[in-house]
Image (cartoon, rainbow, N blue to C red; front, side, top):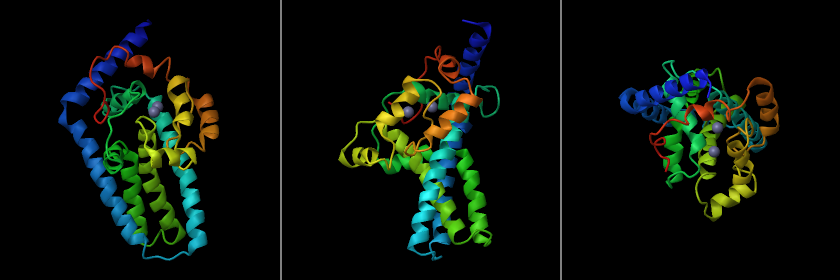
Length: 241
Ligand SMILES: [Zn+2]
Ligand SMILES: [Zn+2]
């Protein structure tokens, strides 16, 4: 084990101690969950009074689907390869990495998962603030308003889709994965068994592009961030079995 790796493991453990002991880090997740849901409701209320016709609805929804799969995959890629545990956000980064060592999540209602997992998406809360302001002020309207609404909701659904890859599935959820609307377990598995691949969270359709970007930008997580938590003896993150 190199000195750098040992230092990183110590930094990781220190970051997780902060995450577990300092109430503000738990609070971040709760505040972000609440803010995301309230802002999504506000955005929906502001948007659904506008009419854009069925053809444009389908097109903007499809575009938002692709964008949500890609952007959430990019954020996941950035987070998995981030090892700055000493920054103020370090404890949140460390806690995020633990998703790689948790094969089975606690069984929960999908609405609870939608709410709870949205709490990890700080960037989405900021996005929603600008989206709500934009639609409210009329800067974003029609197709653009529906676009940001669908994108934000699908970004939360992406977390549910990932969660469903880590729990036993019932008929409906398995069907949604099989027809490719949500991510199938088969598609997601290489993210955990291989290195630096399949970062997408919604249904994985943009993974071919994300994999090319990952290959050029990052060395991967198997020999880096995955080893940083190897000496961590604490429990996995909340909501995970
Ligand atoms: Zn990951
Ligand atoms: Zn996973």
